[in-house]
Length: 332
Image (cartoon, rainbow, N blue to C red; front, top):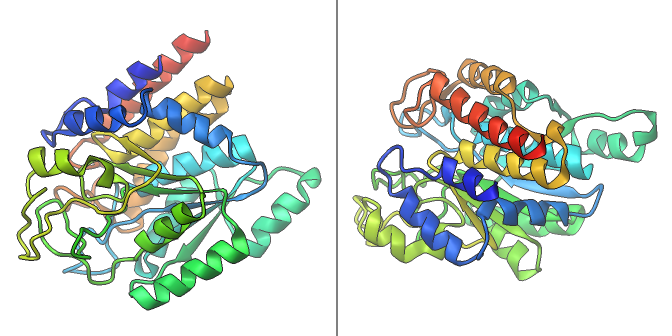
C-alpha cells in the first residue's frame, strides 16, 4: 500500500516532471519514500524537539508578508501527526514577516501555538492532561545571524529531527530562486545552515518538495537540470540554475508539497495502525480557509484563494480523501 500512496502524490498532474524526480529519489531509498519517512519518524525518541521549516515569500517583490498555501498546511498536518505519535514538541521556523500567516493554519490543524516554555510545561506535566502543541519561531535571513542561531538552537533544544517542507534552498551560487528562475533571495531565511549542521551531527533530516528548488533536492540535482525548466540555467544570471544544493538524508517528492506531507501521515497511520495520525478532509478545508484569511496566496496564480499550486480546493480535498481510502482499505 505504501507504493500506492507514493504513486498517488507523484503523478505529474502539473507538468513539472515530478514523476521523473520521484524515480531518481526512489533509487536512493530502495523502498517507498513515505515508508522510509514513517520508519524515520517512528525512530524519533519520545518527548524531544522536532524542527520544521516552511514558508515562502511567494510575492516578496510586492510584500514580505505574503506567504503561500503550499508548505504551511503540510507542515501543520505532519507536525500534528508527529506530536500525536511521538509526544514531540514541533518547532516551526519561518521568516519573521510570515509568522502571522502560519499560526492560524496550525490552529486549524488542531495545534495550540505556544512558547517554548509553555511547550516544555505541556510535556513535563503531561500526567495532568495531553495538549496538542506547536511553537513558531522566526529564523534569520542573513548568513552570520543564521549560523549563530543554528549553534544556539542545536545546543539548547537538541532536536531529534529536522524536516523542511516546500522550503527553497540556495543553489551552488548561494542564490534562492522561484520556479520561474528568478532570484528571490532577499529576506529569505537561511535554513540551509540548520540542515548542514544537523547532518554534520548525525541528526536525521528530511526534505519535502515539488519543484526542484527546495531543500533536499540536491540528491536529484542532475534530473532537475535535465527535466525541470530553469533547472540548469536560471533567469537571474548567476549561472547556477534553480536546483537546491542542500541535501537531506531523505528526499520526499510530490506534485504538491502539502500532498507529500499528507502521504507521509497516511503511511505513518498504516505503520502504527493509528487512524488519528491521518490527515482529514475536514482539517484540510479548515486549514485552506485559515491560510487565505491569514494572507497566503496560491503560489502559482497569486490569487488569495483556497487553491494550492493551481489546484482547486476540491482537488486538494479529493487527494486527502483518496489517501484516507487507501489507509482505511489497508487497516480494515
